[in-house]
Length: 556
Image (cartoon, rainbow, N blue to C red; front, side, top):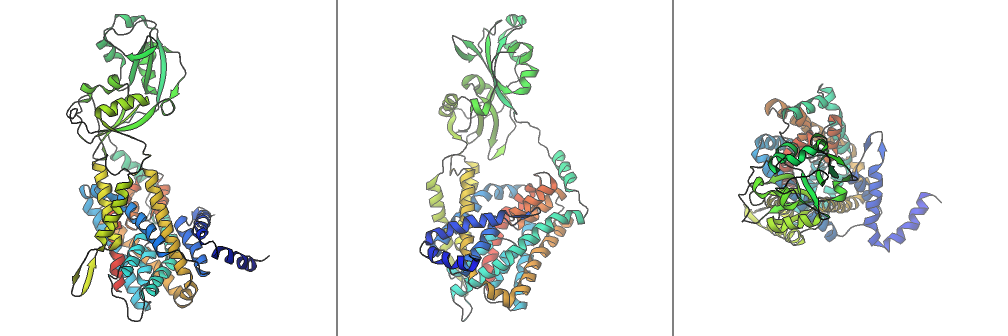
């Protein structure tokens, strides 16, 4: 049986089971996206776009309402994720990253508009060229939303559906070539410019390392006191000589473990210790011998984040609260307004502080009741905030004002992005608000994007061959220009004018193009996560700017 006859048998079946089509595109798209040629793979977005084109060629479609659901989930999640970074980069080198994001977005915009005029592309294809060349899905979503919401004037003789098809086809033709070109340039550009990314990243890490260390290799062990000198020591002497000011030490009394009291320790006492391995070798091994099996803390203990909301304890120091003695918990970290905060016994707590602790579940519950609210490795999603956040975003996007007969507004993309940015930022400031666990956020963003992209591919598939026949080579060349030229312009401005560090500039450029795939290549070449700091700096601004660009370019 040849391929053509197999397709003829499969098409009638799928036409009667349309509910299978999206998931078939999703699965096949992932398979295609994960195929490797050497070290290169297209990735899930390009894979699903490609498979969607094939299904679209045979007449399959995803309903516009389903595509809109994917669009809303994706754009809102992008805003939610970028929210904390959006505010953070405003406070630290915000102007530099903002300027770089503007340079990359505006140079891509000018190139796409220029090529559209020079090639006399059909209405809407300029938006597809911009979105595909910069590999920016938010730009594509914003352009299609601008058409659907009638916020742009349609070209005479063209319908909404025709122009949306043009956007999708322009994007489909240029995206795959844009992605390949971006990855190749990011991979080889540092070598051509004789920049040692590995060395630059190590130098940056050394120059910007923070002066704190989180407890590592935390374990739970049981010991028997075997040093007779212990009996002559007071409680305060024991604390000064044999405690590291963080680990949890309890003594066995009446078959239960309790905090060490003023009576101190006696020869033969059994103690249970929760702390980093170095504490056992530096301190405990001098006074006791191990008698129990070691349990790793992540197996024998629970980890949770306790949010301080009780006004009665704000202002108290860690020394006064004595978390290790009162609750038998090991304090791992304190975050304030989303940032790590170095701490010691004199550190005062404030409302909204997030304390990461390790210990027995019932002890964490006790601390949570006393201090505020417990947040374990997020398993619960605040569906109320998620739902109404999207509703508010859509409502904000529907608002517009008229200037000179032209309706101007954020559109659904801008409204959803603004709503997500605000809620994501508020979440970083007030941890009890709008919980959206990382795994859930990743799923919503990925699923939403792929649902939207599957719809784009299927819509473009019906006319893709005709587009390639009429504008194929010229459109691909134009897309490569829109991809490559902004990279070099961005590098020149970022390094020569803005003085962004070499370890950050390539990550910043990929952030300005919102390309996580290209960032992964830069990180791999650098053998360090340092370039991701530059990515975060421009990514938040780029998401806003490229959404705006997607709407504006519909005028060309």
